[in-house]
Length: 139
Image (tube, rainbow, N blue to C red; front, top):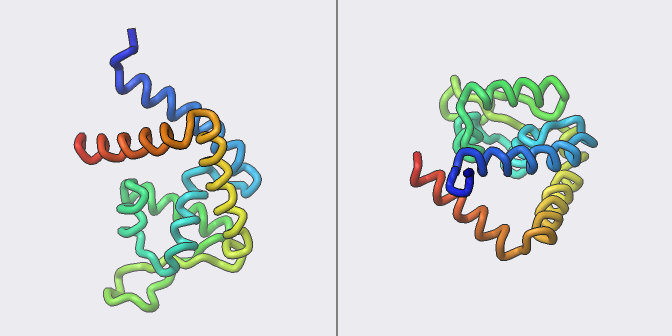
């Protein structure tokens, strides 16, 4: 019945992936989405919310909520310094975030290797590539 249903199968995959990712990110008291956003900030100190939204393919309102949550946990700070437009914010990691940077990267590698061991490296790379292409085409 659902062999050709993109909606059902993508959501079923998302639920399975979210469960596994949530288990791993629990050690940081972060959701997977917050963990990945923090990884982007750590790799790009001074990134703007607009750039985060583009990188993570999320709405600006979602990015604002994520920034609020990560700031409340002490992982990031907002700054208006070093921006061309004084209305624009830059997001920087705190020392607390920097302390877990390597561990966050290791978690990303672990999750990739774990999935690759289950479905194969070539399959995971193909799946991700095709999903990204489909997203662009559907938008």
